Length: 370
Image (cartoon, helix red, strand yellow):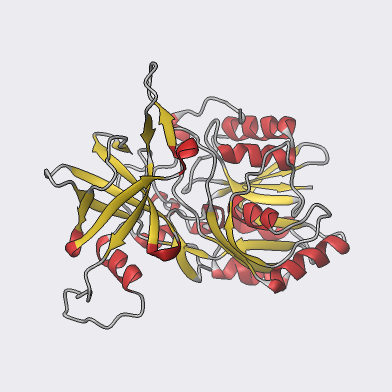
């Protein structure tokens, strides 16, 4: 089981730092060193002081979709639909969630074949449960049925899609539809809706993530300029994130990735020259581990990854990571343990709790260095 601890509710960041009077890069940064368990504290905008020429930052340039939509059952029951992963043949992995007083929660009683109505004359039809050994959870007692959280579904947009101004020519009907009717996915610790711009990194190049690759949120154009001027290298890749599994701490499922040739070459060169390779986020680690062989050589690649990084498997591609703070028992903590070891994880998380760091996508950050 991943590392467990008690997270006080007051340390769950429920609003963007901008709403707390901070710039993006004024969130706190905890730096920890694997060599001796040393820990330092600063603001994220001081990151260049802790990096050096030749260090390689690998970033995920996937942009965050407005992946949540209001949905209605045939009998008028309201739901919230989360678009998770865009599959081949225009299929989707989706999650149906039920509104409640403190936000939404998974709805386990949807039926195969049913169609939900979406805004703007769109529909979604649920076909079969997605990967029942992961997405399904046994019911209590001896009932052999499973509770299905994720579905493989078809999203049907109006054709042609007509915007309120009457315009019908679109370069990307899906993203135009989501921009008009969708909104960012949020969980119960975020009490109100925030603009989509708060869920976007400054270096996003391609929309596709259901939830923000949030380790890179604090970067600003000015900070990136300072890093480049210092001689820090930055290499991009894509991994489109699916929906998180906060309720049941499920392992991550298949996600689309693309690692360019130049990025793979930079990772290999950094290895050969003994430089630090720092993944900006767990999504970067997952993508790189997918294309790094048992000898530690990273290759270019594209496709769907089912790799789950655990302490038993280990990490071959990177020796550092910039990441947010993850909730108790989250599968991401297993990845951190694979990089840093359980002792280091306990030291740093105890320090973060003691210093009142903030958790989740709008919270503070942790830089793990060799």
